[in-house]
Image (tube, rainbow, N blue to C red; front, side, top):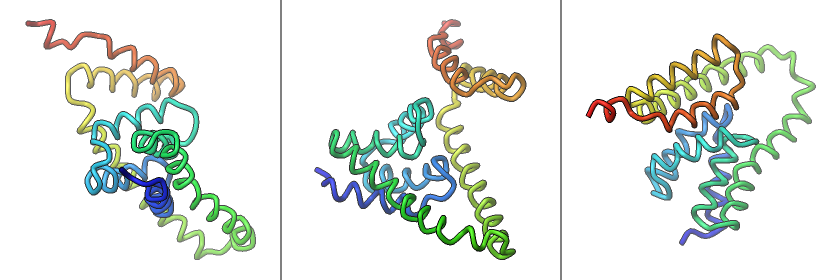
Length: 179
C-alpha cells in the first residue's frame, strides 16, 4: 500500500516540473503513475482526465485527486491534491514578489517566449497521445468532428460540447448495426 507521504511527495515532484497547466502534466502522469509505478492504467488516466475536464477546477488537480483517491481513499485524495498544488503556491508567491520589478526585462520576455513554445509542444504531444487512444472507431471520428465543428464554427461552450459528446456515447456503433 502506498503511504500518504509518498503520494504527497510524488505529486509535489510532478507539480514542480509541470509547466503549462494540466495538459502539460499528462506526459508526466503517464510516466510516473502509469509506466513507472503502475498505480493506474492508461485508460484510467484518460478517464480521469476526461472527468477532470468536465468538473470545475484545474484539470491537473482534478486528475491528481482522482488518482490519490484510488490509491488511498480520502487521505490519498488530500495528499495528492495538496502535493500537486503546493509547488504552485510557493512559486506563485515568490514570483509575485519579484516579477513586478522585472516584467519589462527583455531577457525575461525571451524566457517566457521559450517556455510558451515548449509548453505548446507538450500540449501537442498530449493531444496526439489522447487522439491515438481515444479516436479509434467511426463513431469516435464523427463525435470528434461534430465537437470540433461546434466549438470552432459555432462557439458553443466546452461544457455543452462535453455533455453532447457524453450523450453521443449512446449512439450505436455503425459496424454493430451492419451485423
